[in-house]
Amino acid sequence: MRKRPATPQLPSNELRATLGRRELFFGALVLALPLAACSGTVGEPAKRPFAHGVASGDPLPDAVILWTRVKGEGDSAVEVKWEVAEDAGFQRLAASGTFTTNQERDFTVKVDAKGLAPGRTYYYRFSALGASSPVGRTRTAPQGSTERLRFAVVSCASLAHGFFHGYREIAKQADLDCVIHLGDYIYEYATGDYGDVRTYEPANEIVSLSDYRTRHAQYKRDPNLQEAHRQHPFITIWDDHEIANDGYKDGAQNHTPGSEGAWADRKAAAQRAYMEWMPIREQEGGRIFRKLAYGDLVELVMLDTRYHGRTAQPGGAIAAPPAPDPKRTLLGEDQAAWMESSLKDSKARWKLLCQQVMVGNLVLNPGKEIANLDQWHGYPESRNRLLSFFRDSGVKNMVVLTGDIHSSWANEITFDPADKAAYDPVTGRGSLGVELVTPGITSPGIPDLFLSILDDARPKNLHVKWVDGSKRGFIILDVTNERVQGAWYHFQDITVEAPQTPAFAKAWSVRDGETRLVADEAAAPSRQGAPALAPA
Image (cartoon, rainbow, N blue to C red; front, side, top):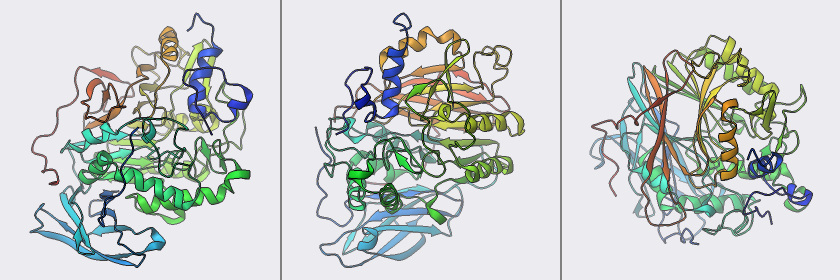
């Protein structure tokens, strides 16, 4: 059992082997510094063919992925009809077809619906075995001149830690173009291993293909997540927990080869289940790094900082940046070169670099940088290459969107925030870019003691414009030609099942042609006249 301490403490050597770096980082940081610095469950599936709802994703100007799962009484193959219409009453059909699913793909259905018009809201549904699915709503990407876009940005949904109120709220916002999910869509732990608000299916830590399928099925039965998928297309990438905590290309902290089998088998099983159960457009070799254009306004560059090229983390959870190692990499050479080429080739005004782990760094004393070795800090060669590209490439208007750390951050990105000759936090001179970090939907935040330490160290970390470490929620990203604004929304309590209302927390913007963050008094208003949500 991989238990997590209830309060920050310095783990023993035995516990160090079982604690995740993300949790260990904050607890160890608190104790490494001088004191002065310092159950419910998702219910059983109903006896109906479409118990796991519908979903859509990866919008293009003329196509979108449609997803569902259909299951009858037996294990025979099922032919499924799908329809896309311009209206919720399906009087004006835009596309239709059939798809045959079977036990080999766990009875999931994934269709690349083509021939659609750009920048258009559509409604879709499936039918099979004498039943119809819920009606879903999706939206294609715009093409050409685009004035405004709105995205929800989310990550880190530990079912065991609470209820998905963030997904419920996002589902109600009719003016969103898409939901960007930055990973940790599911968690792999056993019931009671990490969080105790809700129990998992299966109850054990998931290792096999059947296990991962069952866990995805449980998540897809959650009514709030199901509704968010029903109302909006998703663009997703995985982080570590879709397979195992603190994973990398060839292993994970939360994988024991002797008792949990070969890593390659577990990784293949988890990634297969992900492709079956998520509305993602599949690529050769199972890779997830890709780019999606939203007219001439936004290019989404989606990265895999976890399982494509990442080498093993260089040691414990917290330390000074590791010694140079030319073999160490976060992206892999092929993905890094692809990213740089994609950013250089983009014709969009704004380039959104969507990825998993935080780029921003922390300094406690002049010249003393603290590295979270699971994040970009632990891979200084990759981080230096990224920041050098920001500085030297001539590419403008790059915004990093980050998940993973279960907290809210607004960062200006620098090589060394303590180098006053290179970076001025007042004017933004020397900032190479900005980073907006979304909190977890439910996953637990940073200990309060660490936040007090960060406040004490604020004069050395003025590149961190704002941080909230404890509250769960999401970001609404509002993009125009003039600026990108991230507005954070937080919930006071995600452990109660009754619907909760989020509170606006903070908004920060970066303006066209600049690399600094500016505080906004309020979030951008919703777009008026958005097409109607899909009917219940």
